Image (tube, rainbow, N blue to C red; front, side, top):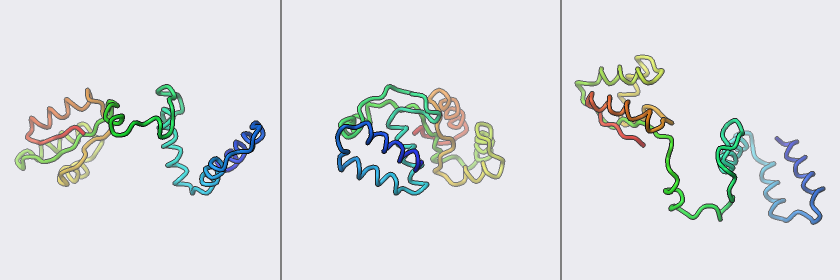
Length: 151
């Protein structure tokens, strides 16, 4: 990361006919001073802002970046949510065993892990599901007497 950043900085300096601005110098210095975890967080954030998935192929077209691209909370609400979490809020004590069995059915958890998860209500049972994947699970849990929310 360090060497490639320095090479990129040197390349931009050589290609540019004018001296780099102080802002770019400051940004480059801050990037070079990040530790390993901060660099990882930065690359994840950068990929998200650029519209890249984890493998680097474009998911969406590259749009304008920076403060001008976001128009505030209205822009965040306008973006349609595609990944949902299933959250168990409460359940009937009589249906606890059935709910644990159902949680084991749609997760890769063992009996003890599923029991511990169900007992620490409210909790997220499964993350990153599409609405089509989550609805049958929610319906089944509601039939068993659980209060489930799609977040």
